[in-house]
Amino acid sequence: MRKTILIICLVVLIAAAVVFYLRFVVGGPEDDWICEDGKWVKHGAPSAPKPTSGCEKEAKVDKITPDTAKTEGVLDESMFQWSTMSEGPYRDKVTYATSTDLINWTPSGVILAEHASVPGALYQDGTIFVYFVDVTQNGQPEQLGFVSSSDNGLTWSEQRTLTIKGIGNRAVADPAPFQLDDGRIRLYYFDINEPRLNLGSQGQEPPQKIYSLISSDGLNFTQEDGVRFQRDGAFDPDVEKIGDIYRMYVGDLAGNKVVSATSTDSLTFVEEGTAYQGGAVPDVFYDNGTYYLFTAGIDMATSSDGKQFTASGHHFSDPNYRITADPSVVQLDDGTFLMLYKVQP
Image (tube, rainbow, N blue to C red):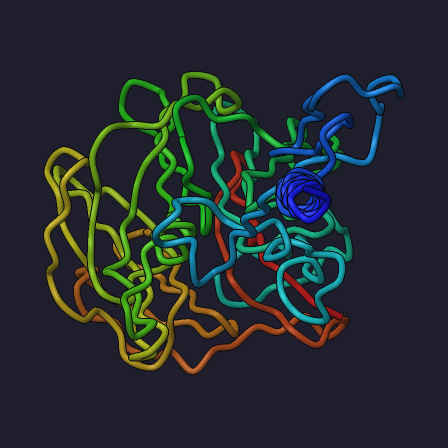
């Protein structure tokens, strides 16, 4: 009998031990608050109140980089920390020179905009409109900067950044304003964000696209539908109209040349051919039957038909700066010419 009682007690103890093990070792504490998926969950009847901290769910952080931008459609802000870059547009400034013959130029010594590059200018109804690549804001892609003068350059407005309606994730580079017959301003530009967002698997860029904005006052712009021109390596557009033909000039940096394209409506341009070999970043000004081509550097070439240019041997460089480049020429009512350009110390 005693032996039977001992066996029963032993079985009870073993069962209790198994229950204890399953409940508190395998199953965890019963009367307690358990952290599950970032939330405190009550198990049993805990004596302590619900904890207020210590159970935060680990957040998933997705950092968009240039490598993932093409699939995510988003760009990393670290790409646009302009002020930390030793080179690039943050170090550029916009200034101008004057001339009476389009050949000999005198620097003004006036800085119109800081952290600004690749200006495009237009003279309309007594006002000089100057647009440029604006990188004053860290964390933001290139934007459209602006200054103006209504007294032939004696005084200038404050530098400002323009807001563009409907531009989406595009970024304005190499702005080229053009006055339409109805007085509106069509501004052509290269979307510099597109190659960043659409790099091929081997890092190759897609064909460059030239887009356009439209404005009735030169300040408030709206993105226009469609692509004006597309080509591998097409940068820095400039548009002129002689007669009924619009001609767009674009720079091909890799080929160190200028390519021309023509249009009858200023919206759809078809490539015409190589207009100049030996320079890029074009700006063309037509005066008294002669086309004057200014390329980065700043070198000058001329043409009688706008299709083929010949180097003139003339060159302009601002002696106050290490770099002089990216010209844009306008003529004032008094016959004086202004060349807007970028400089870098």
